[in-house]
Amino acid sequence: MPTRLLLALALASAIPLAACSRASAGTTTVAKDAKRYEGHGVVKLLDAASKTVLIAHEEIPGYMKAMTMGFVAKDAAQVQGIVAGDTVDFAFVDDDGTLRLEKITKK
Ligand SMILES: [Cu+2]
Image 1 (cartoon, helix red, strand yellow):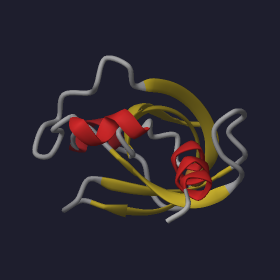
Image 2: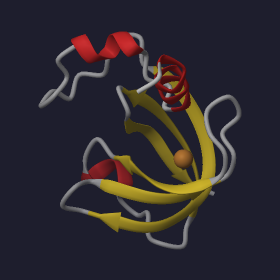
Image 3: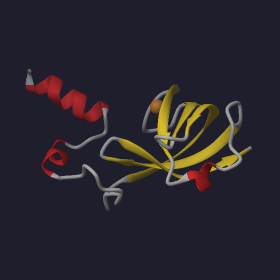
């Protein structure tokens, strides 16, 4: 793969190339350098088993354009009362590509 394409991919996914050397599988500890973002959107689906909330989010400035994607909740309590169809404000960190919800509130 050409270096330029690799670099473009790394930038597009906001994952530094150096992240490859850090073991992160199986841990729920958020990396110290994880970046925090805030978003707004509509909940499409909640999957209790994987603690994943599918959110159709608006553009997140400096991070990504509008799209529908999954965010991982800390636990069931964090998303209690949230149902599909809710408009929400949320904050999350990009933990080596896993988007972990810091908070989510119904509007
Ligand atoms: Cu997205």
